[in-house]
Every structure is written in C-alpha cells, then in structure tokens.
Length: 128
Image (cartoon, rainbow, N blue to C red; front, side, top):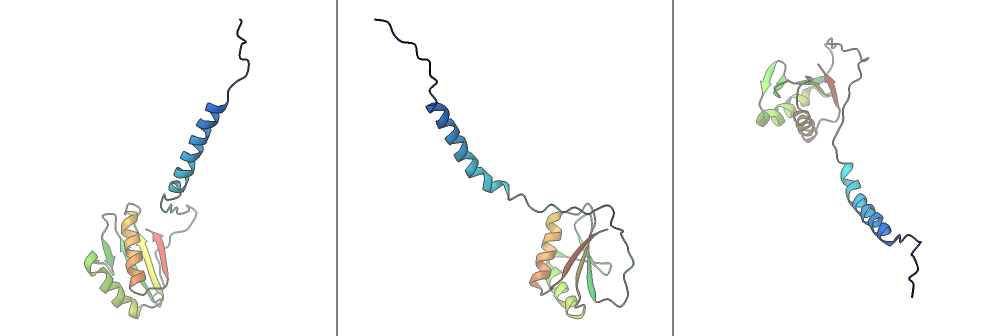
C-alpha cells in the first residue's frame, strides 16, 4: 500500500513558540520602564550667574567631585540635613541646586530627598 504524502504544514509547534515568546515579552516589558530619570538641559537656555540680592532662595552647589557647598563652604553629607533645615528656615522661597555637569545624579537626588525631608517645598535645578 502506498503512503500519501503530507502536503499541509503543521503550525502547532510554531504556535507554541509564539506563545512562549509572548509570555517572555509580558514578563520583561514591565522591567523596561524602570530606567531612571533622563534629565536633559536644552542648549538654548541662557545661563545667568546673576541672582538678585533680595531673593530668599537657598542655593546649594554640587561640585564635580560630588561635594556640597552652601555659600562657598563645604558641607559634609552627615551635616547636610541639619544645615539645609537651618538655612531654609530663614530662606523660605525654596532651594536652588546648582549642579556641575560632571556631578553624579545620585548626589543631586540625595540632596533633593534631604531638602524634602527638611521641609523645603520648592526645588529647582540648574547646571553650572
């Protein structure tokens, strides 16, 4: 007896592969959203160093070697909270973070968290 040739394609294994790929993508997709903050400063923004003398804004500088400076004096990380809380009591308009371009993102975020915990309501960031 002669066997008939099979002329149809069996798509069951192909369907199994696609289902496995779909499950993998469904598991990986939520992890792709957790990439952190991407901050970009436009080039067309005019950088001014002149600040009015009558403002009540606390200015903290984050240097390229990730040190904090207030009024030209270096502040250690352990004294940062107390210093920001003390200074923000008299300078009530908020906090201006001046970060150098090579400073680490984590140091700026630490300063932002410290300021929020110290009661600062308004925070601005600029690059120097």
